[in-house]
Structures are given as structure tokens and as C-alpha cells.
Length: 310
Picture 1 (cartoon, rainbow, N blue to C red):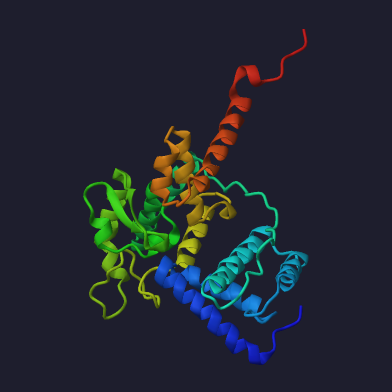
Picture 2: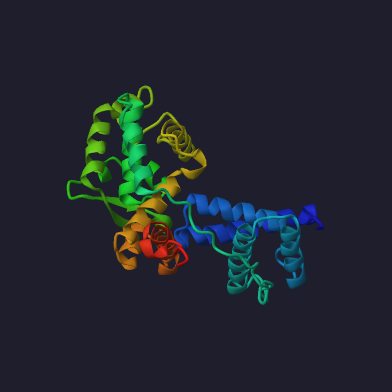
């Protein structure tokens, strides 16, 4: 693919920043979302002059992504960024057309999420509770909250201290687009939080007497990082003799949703608790639950077993 001329780079950057400003101000896009859009659009802008890019140039760019072996899901995300960006330029009168019209998204099948069984989750919590050091108490609280409330890891690490002190069995969570929702906290999760609060001060940065975060840290952002959460869970999986590849904060969120559906929870309630904008995103858990239940029937029900010939 031909790179955009250097003198066009400034024009491209200006258009991209205008789009990002709109996404932040009007749609409440999070910092992580804006960073992802910026990366995708700078990648696009490196191959063409965005203000006058043609439909054929966009198609050629996407074809290049496909030929590079990039996952269909990543291609679709980049196309989505392109469509929103060029749609913005068109609506603002910065372009006379939208070159992404009639450009098809790569076909993809949505993979079913990795799932932990309730027994696996119980084993993880049991092993975490065996470590009564401050680090072990923190990890127990993290797992209990992720599994009890179905939080995204970004929501967990930025939980304010005040939100977790609620006595009504719920925690106020700020999710994508700064949308707030109430997430449930069971008795075990509340007990884990109470134990954590007794040792929490040991994790305050040096010279800091208080932090607004439930899980403070010496990290630059002042709270435990998403990466550290991933690392702690991988280490715990090894101790619990569970494949580390099966465990991540998001897998615990999937387990929360799947176990709710398997237990009979209605999709609308699960959608609300997960903070999904579209119930179609939540419906994947019905497929997961059905597949798991079908597997149970085929392996355990007498009529599902092969019959001996008479």
C-alpha cells in the first residue's frame, strides 16, 4: 500500500483529532476507546489522504488487512472506525461523500466465550483464601467482586472506595460511555471487601494517606492496573491446577453471566447487570448455556447413551 505523502500527515491528524473530540464530548467515549480509534485511524491515514480518499482506496486498504492474515474481528473493528470517521467528516461538511458506502465488512463467526465451571470458580476462591497475606486478601476480594458482579476489569480497577462501602448489596459502577449501573454484591463478596479494607492501607503509595480507589496502587494511575489483575489471576490458576489460558478477568465476567442464565435468569436482567447496550450481545450466553446443558444430557442421561443391540 502506498504511504500518504508527509505533507498530508498534518491534515490527516487534524481530521482525526476533530473526530476524537466529537466522540469524547458527544458520545462519552472512554479513554481506552479513544486510544483504539486513534490507532486505527492513524494506520488508515498512513496509506491515504483522508480528506479525499476514494472508495477504491478504502477497499484496497481493507484487502491489504485481510491478505496480511489479520483476524476478521480486527478487520471489522477497523472498518467500523473508518465508517464512523468518514460518516463524521461527511456530516460535518468536510467531505462531499462517504467512501465507506457499499464497503462490506469481513464475514466472521462470533466465537463463544471461554467459560469456567462453577466448580472451577469455587476452587479458585478456595485457593485464594488460603493466602492470608495482604496480597492474598486483595486477590480474594478481586475474584469475589468480578464473579459476583460481572464487572469488566477496567470497571473493577477504577472502582471508587465509596462505591464499595454500600450496605444495600449493590455497587455503583461506571461503565462504557460513562453510563452508570447498579451491580449486585452477594454476602461472600461483601465479606471479602470488609477483610480487604482492613489491610488496604498497606497498598497506599508512599506518603499518601488516602486514595479514592478501592484498590490503590503505586502505579501511575493510582490504582491496580488491568495488566496486574491478569497476572495475579494467571498465577492463581497455576496454584489451583487450572489452565492459565482459561482464566482472565473477562472469563470471570463470562462465568457470571453464563451461570446466571443456566440458573434461570432472564436475559433482560443479565443485560442490565452486564451493562450491555444491546441485548443481542447478551444473547450469546443462551447459546453457551444450551451447549453446556446439551453436553450434560448427552453424558449423564440414560436415554442418551448408546443402546446395546438386542
